[in-house]
Image (cartoon, rainbow, N blue to C red; front, side):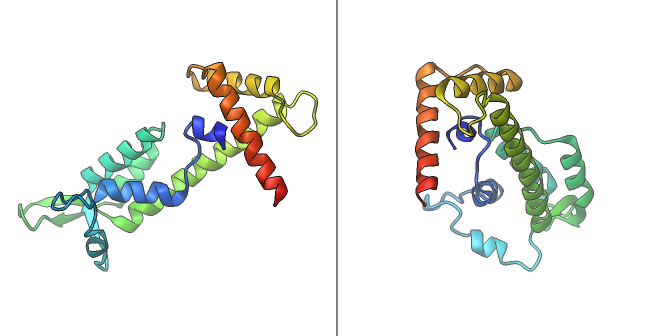
Length: 178
């Protein structure tokens, strides 16, 4: 988990959806509670939001996770939008069904997560030079260097790399005990 956390490759689906909902339904500012009316707002049979706001929220959420919105996802969301009359401005605007938005985002996130896990497994196998099924600190540092080079990001400090390694070893020991 330390490696995936360090490269923003790990996040629960619930965290992603809740963070996105927080961007779609921001705090109304009255009491600072944040999203206190979210259940009310989502209680409609078919809640819709302005397409432009949806795209901005998705882009912001993916940017925070080190991702960009792929053009095909943007096109998919735009194609799913329908024109509705804005009750306040009395003009037609593109609206998107919230369920469609969340499903599209979740499916894309799941594919990205699977690809990241697959890539990390490949890197693990490639850097387990003695083929014992574990990475020692030297193998781990080589894996981190390769991953950073692939992602075009600076390598973490030796101290940070060692900390991530120790956390990964501790997590592995906890799993093996169960």
